[in-house]
Length: 173
Image 1 (cartoon, rainbow, N blue to C red):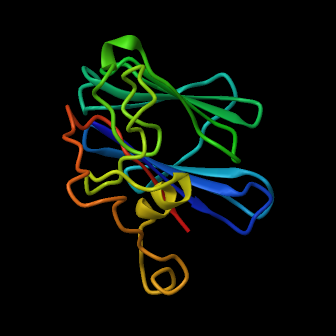
Image 2 (image 1 turned 180 degrees about the vertical axis):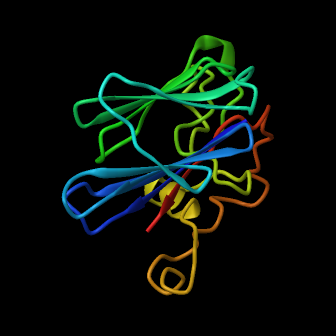
């Protein structure tokens, strides 16, 4: 199982990201000098270009994530799930193989090849539009509750059953 969280920053790179995979966490935090601080399970990790960082169990038998840095871009591979992510600091791109069809949920849809009913919020109900969908995934805290309204379902009984939970992409404003 994996999840991706993103939030806006006030730095030259506008997005921080947190990736949860196999009970472990990778955090990409933009710094004021246009660099990115990488944390693995809350420990700062130095990563050099073309020298990957491997997040694994203590015996290095199970590799949960492999992080490569090429220039200013970070590439994350999740071997167990056969997933790849790219993080350049201003967006996140996920590359998901076909074996995960219809097993996803979140802002990116369910990856079933059908474009109807893609506006499913975290509660399982269908939202009215893309704006409501994005707002339904905002993680609310004291500073957010007042500025980002919680949208309601498009209509009662519009719940869609999830076929599985493999990923969520949350926006934290």
